[in-house]
Amino acid sequence: MEYVNQDKAVLATNLRTLCDRHGSVAAVCRKLNVNRQQFNKYLSGAHAPSATNLKIIANYFGLSVPILFADPDEFRTLVDGNFFHAMATARQLPEFSRFVSNMIVENNSDRNDIVGVYDRYQYSSIYKGFVLRSAFCIYQNKEFLQHYYIERFPSFDNPRKIEYVFKYYGFCFPVADRLFTADFEGIQSNELTFGVYAQVKRNSKKFMFGISSGIAATVFRQPYSTKVALHFRGPGLIRREHLNSLTVMDRSDPSIPREALQYLGDGSDMIQMS
Image (cartoon, rainbow, N blue to C red; front, side, top):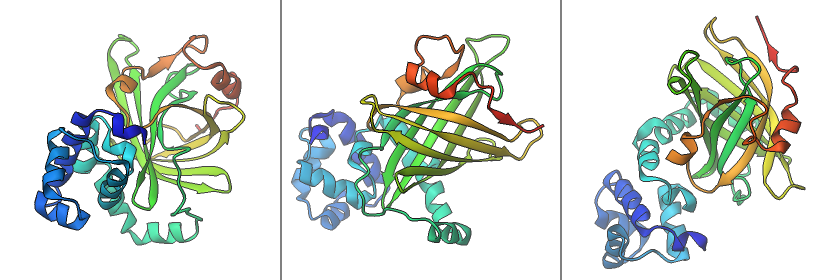
């Protein structure tokens, strides 16, 4: 497995974070049925687990193997409650249970074909006529696929300064070769967003194209519906280098993939309600 050869120090840091929040190391080892002395070597970064033990550890903590190798700062943010805890709370709501009961959730499917980090492109509802590049991540958490994405908007007066930041997190539902998403914005907590995407399987660069609709509980952010292109960047969670590239761009910017621009068009079909 490719992750065995990744940074043992990163894995060690993330394992210590998990153990700190799941009781004693001895208790974790007993439940994992892993030798304590061997597990200590994982925690120190001296050794990496075998592919089999990685899977056992990931399954015990309700995570996927790629997440175990995520950037420790991002990993700590998730574990400390900004995402995992919020999703666990949402799963307990009766409204969510009724919603899931009406969806076909592929609980036992291996979704390694879609988990990971994506560049997310759409026309901006704030900077009219410009393309917004945000960071979008799909990850496995126990039996659910979940996702989160982050938007950054520069200041009108000083493009080098970040004026707005929005963070969305929610669930993914793979149904009949489509991916349905439902999420809410976590900073201002005033917007719900829904999307549906399809994989472009004839393109080796791994794109998903779809439509996203958002409804905010404020007169300053009008409801909208727009095309969205997702371009796969790699496994794991959103890292600092992904965040550094988030901004709005003129559609002639050469860093925007040609396939994404072809799908998005000129933005004239973006729907905004006034």
